[in-house]
Length: 570
Image (cartoon, rainbow, N blue to C red; front, side, top):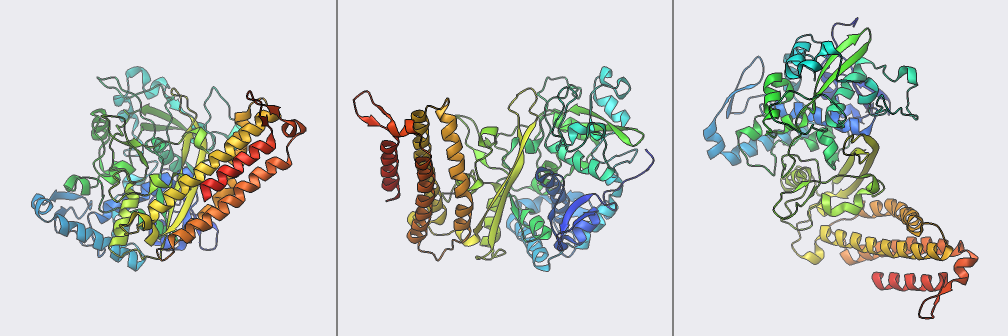
């Protein structure tokens, strides 16, 4: 490798969109110093942007759990001035002054948010730890281990010298995700250049690969106990996060200084990103099946230990699997929806599957927002935003912009290779999302969820009408025909529902707004059914007799559909 260093603190590697809608590549120092000048992250994939966002949040959470908005250490800890890491915590403060500590952390968040810039402590921290962010550092390469460390952690027959256990660039590049056994025909790169990569791109994909790792690897770290290899942590979530007016706003809204769903103690506040922990200590921690205790640790969690050798300008990437994390009741994770466990089991993160790829975010509204005031399965990021609104850090008329993005695997348990990327969002006023009204009839989240359930009910009527029409038409698979019509129906609903949702306010007449959506829903569903009627074949019009002697044709099915629709929307 001709270059001797590539430092993420000072060298450009993060892709962003600036105020003039131009793409820029910036360093860590630049992204924090000029965050208000960038609209958003703009890497090769939305899922990559999410991985980078969490990496940036790990840095911010680490710094601002140690220093306040004026760059002064908090009174409950001692800081090493050189490393800016805690030396000790005042245990008495955590047992006696819990609310005061929470208030100070929230005060830091408020002052930073109002000042619209991060303080110098972030830049000081990065500059003090530059050696931890050098991609080519011989002794401590970023998100990697040295050759000696790798050989020590894997079986002898998997050592670097043996040349086994490598993953190609085209495999960690999630725009390709190609193994040596199954070429990607529609790759954005030609075959000769699928393993070419620049240093800035390598840094982005290293972080992304740790978050979205499949399970095809044959090499594992040495362990006395058998274990299932970890897939990337983000790969096992249905992610949700907040989006702001610019990158600074997005970072701030997602910077959770006081996690809401975990026991408050010094372990929760004492952030330990992976670069502050020795490799052996980290691997030991993972082999003991310990779950991260703080957000910085969680946001920088590894699924693999990686070592890179260089063949000229091309990296040779060695990868060994770490044990998977237990995700049951892992409520430290704020960026996921949850599903209740079976009897006797705890809750687990929701997953997205290929068959749900076309399902819009709003249709799962109840997963993202607590419908009842005591819903423990609300995503942690939403609970955090609720706290900000309760403290009046977010104004009532501010739009809360929630987004979901991620990769869906192929459904094969032995590979779990990426098959598709999903991306969706919804916007809603803060006073609607966090409605304090205790009356169920006037509680907006409940009314919205009821409206969505009604919409799904009408969607079922559309599907059954299309299914019956397909049977009358004699199509080979009436169910698949109905699925296509249903998908078209929901595609027509997505934009108007999101517009309806975003313009709701807490001053609205609930019945009037719900009736307005019913009007739109009726119009669209009748449009879909009328289109089926216009395209009816002679066979559908002629129909056939039922076993009881009654007629069954497209007109009969249309009357049944229309009667059900009118009854539902009454």
